[in-house]
Length: 211
Image: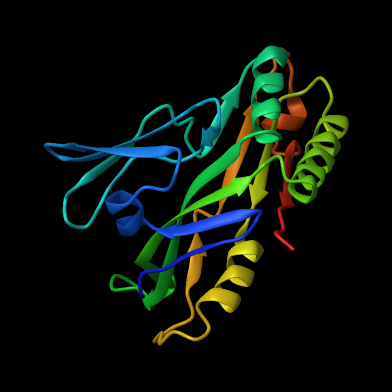
């Protein structure tokens, strides 16, 4: 897949290699013996990316990142995360993948190989993004008040829409399958008998769209 960088008032999508070579405004990249460290101003950015090792053996570390699964244990932590989601740039590491037949067993179905990785930055303060986020979070809390819960915010549709607009004129052998195009908030209450959470009834999911 060719190198790509595209932006709009709501989102900036940058191919990872390009991001590391020439980080966007607000980011800096430090070389390490084993790879790279990505830094940003935590007052402006909310990093929701996991560290990883590339196929070349380089390790990419995202300083101050909360990871793709954000765990919260009290109302103060939830309020802090919510405020950041509604006011900062939300940054994810998304993978464009190709499905390939399983080499181990036909019953295992298709596996995926990574074609390219992109750093996706979304403006959480944008009125349209903020409205969706508030609506989804309010719905989650009202549905599982007083209980532990897990809510996944999914951007797969947004990435597919972005690809159609920005990659449609480029030669590609396959249509990419998007992986890691989401992040998860996990709230663990101190309820002793949290049966709905134990049995998986407190899982929620909503889709974040860019247009």
